[in-house]
Length: 177
Image (cartoon, rainbow, N blue to C red; front, top):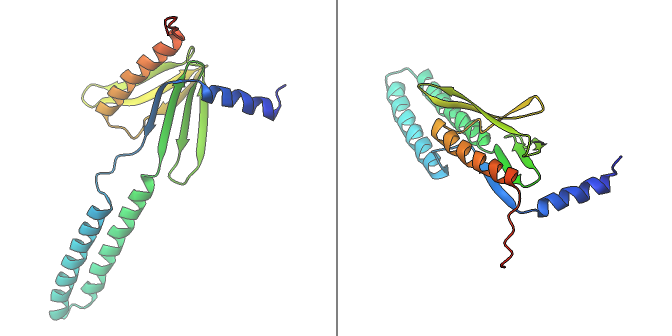
């Protein structure tokens, strides 16, 4: 039976090991904060001007609904930006493959696999491309790269296959240096 100190020592030894592959995957967001402010200012101005036109015609409740629309769109963007805080880190060394997933709420989940025994699997749609990537070990399947697009998944798949093959080959020593 291992004590907590032995486990921590073993983990720090693995972290000192050189990394063959390391990737930090994050969801893509095409709108930055400046773009968000520009869109919200434009929506607010259009809603206000249109609401004033309806107010002049005597339909005063419409002004409130235009304000409510802007508030709902602002809330939707904030939820979207919060979801962008999620990440997935995948590290391959000679002795382990670590997956660390952080949700948008900050919850952390970690998995460790032996790179000699892990298998990479993919679900491919003929029209769409790669839909899902899985790490398979000991009968367990772990979905990885869920928020990547099909082309990004293909590139990531190829890079991870190369890294796993390098881990299976083992260390290479250069006696000259």
